[in-house]
Length: 389
Image (cartoon, rainbow, N blue to C red; front, top):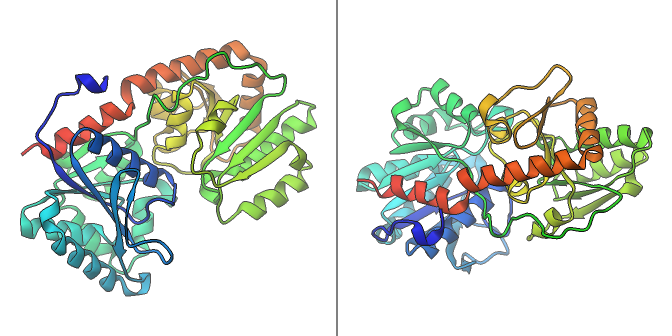
């Protein structure tokens, strides 16, 4: 929906709470920043409250967004963290009417208790499912039961995928309060590159955090299979994280380090999509990765593991299906089994060899994103729910 066609509503005052924010650029952080910026452009007042980080200012304007880095406390002292949130909410209570928490964490419980005491509506959204998801992270906290009990009092729970909705239901959350709203993507910033030059050597890219959840080791093993079979390629891995050196070592062991560029952490990833032929997301668990949506909006050939909300985006009419051969051709890309480097290699080879297929999948993906995941559409969905009495 073009911005000029979005119905105007009474200006809202919204507080977004998230554990980390800019300059940290994970999926949740970027979704929070994109949503805040869009709502501000629509005439609403949006503020971000996040954790205090040494070396960063306790308050600054980031991309037009007022950001308070003032939540303090250590994991060992969970109560001090939650008290810190309560105090900050009380001090700034006149500057917002609604609270949206990104994630189910220590700040969720005090936000909801504060909302019940003041009459302000509090919402939260889960970011990931599975063994790396919100509920698993919550289970490691001493105050997990207390947070879970408080979380059920929230006005609404936002689920970005079928798996997250299922986990909410399994943990006793009311189905009447669960609302499906996906992650979003700026379809103007991420768009197919016109008149792109055709390279003889395809560029295979991964963009994201370098940790075990993302399965980059599987991508390297798949690339080794291509190398062993004489398939020419170059690869770019964009991001940073705790296993970066392990991945560099693995690339050397596989004798493919000369074909791979580790580009490091990048504040602006848009240029990397423009040089990409095939985008690969070999994750072990996910919510609904922004990288997937950005790659789809860019019209790329996409190969991704069948986890989290990925099947819904790539194959909406048959979400979750993967063939016995290890990969399935979908409406908007190719799904592969998680942990299957051989299937991943086969899928990459298909898109390398069949340029017409790659272009057709990319075009379908772009249309699907524009219809269901565009930032204008998603921001309006949040706004309608937040502003409803």
